[in-house]
Image (cartoon, rainbow, N blue to C red; front, side, top):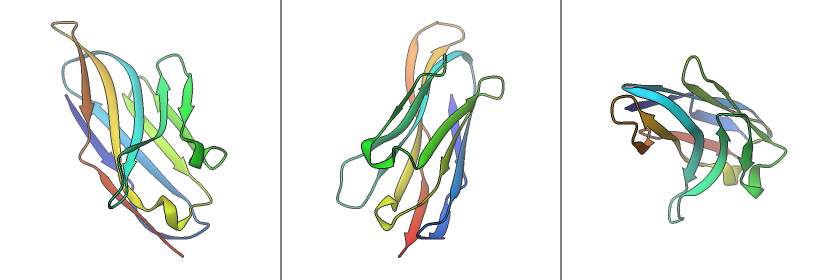
Length: 120
């Protein structure tokens, strides 16, 4: 299973960015897809996650500013980030809880990370 993230970059404070992450490989079902982030010197933290039924969970610092969505057919999760702040600067990682096609085992997978830099 591979997760390919894209959409990071440099943006001014108050601006917007949209991240995408597509899953591929021997996948039977994806239960949860989401985003985490890690700033220098800080632990990795949840940004947002979405279950297969559409239930969502957001980190407190992004509620009301970020919006997660997913396309189950394309096996892709999106993160729309609005009203960006300097403190949103971090490497953003895509994460997926996947039920594998052959074994039906559950695996936890991570993308390679994409840098988001917000200039103040």
